[in-house]
Amino acid sequence: MKLRESASIVKFNWRNFLWISAVHAIALTLCWFFFTWPAFIAFVIMHYLCGMVGITFGFHRLLSHKGFKAVKPLEYFVAFCGTLACQGGPISWIGQHRVHHAYSDKPEDPHDMNKGFWHSHIGFIFNRRADLNSVEEVSHYCPDIARNKYYLFLENNMILIQIVVGLLILTLGGFLGNTPGFDWYSAISFTVWAVFVRLVSGYHVTWFVNSATHKWGTRPNNTNDDSRNNWWVGLIAFGEGWHNNHHAQPRAAKHGWEWWQFDQTWIMIKVLKSFKLIYDIKLPNRDDKPITKISKKMESEKSLLTTSEITHKKAV
Ligand SMILES: [Zn+2]
Ligand SMILES: [Zn+2]
Image 1 (cartoon, rainbow, N blue to C red):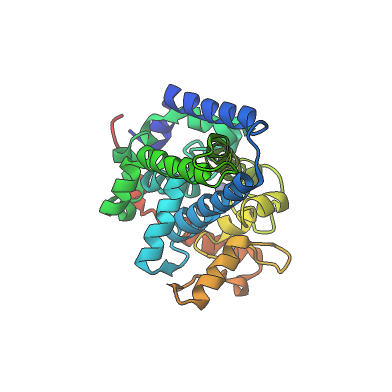
Image 2: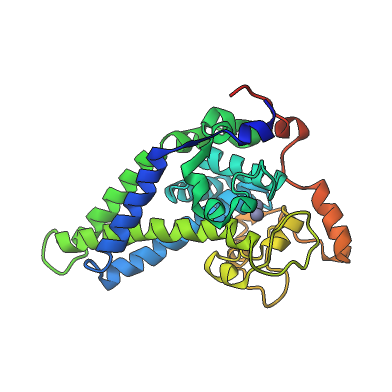
């Protein structure tokens, strides 16, 4: 079956729907009653650890696009943080993201903006495509990740990892409370903020990159999709909002090309480079201007998928 045909076969995923609904309900109701400043600080730390270290630095720029190389302990640590964001394990996340780049804003795109803002922001989580709904299926789009046993472990144990780290946060919160011994109010406060509110904030930050940056913003590069540079997504999504730049040159580790395009993930890359923890960094090719040439370059490095992987056929 061709990818375009299999992309149209969707099934409502009740498990995802109930999970996302429950996380939002717990976070948005309990956060008002269990606010403490230490819990809020734990939320900020976890938000950065999962959202920037794990997703934008790890899953996206390092593993999906190979924009740079990292020493193995760092690579494996950031992949763990990405898994903790609970947006799918590394194989699911990276496989789907590469399909997004190969078919941006086309029917094969997992979060095709042409199907509406709701679909590209959150609906695609509920209406799961049959061809991207299993590890075995999605592995065809990221064989380099899928063959690694550690990444397979993270993929298969995403929920367990979430529970173990959640219990650690609950325990830590309990011992950091004001009352002697174990403080249950502080324990719940830490869990609500550093687990549930952090999950909600991480989800929407990532989802806005799929939705808003394919709908609102400027298009300085003539890419053959609808990607946009969007300043407010750039701010909340650690630099990922300069999405038209990213679609123009997906392998470039730096997304904010102008001095005013604030790119927090790029700052992290530069800091880690100074410690010699990362190397072989791919920079945007600005000499190629005018933009038509950038567009041509994008064609040549549209994603890391090979033709055979893109045209992967499977009876679903
Ligand atoms: Zn995109
Ligand atoms: Zn990308």
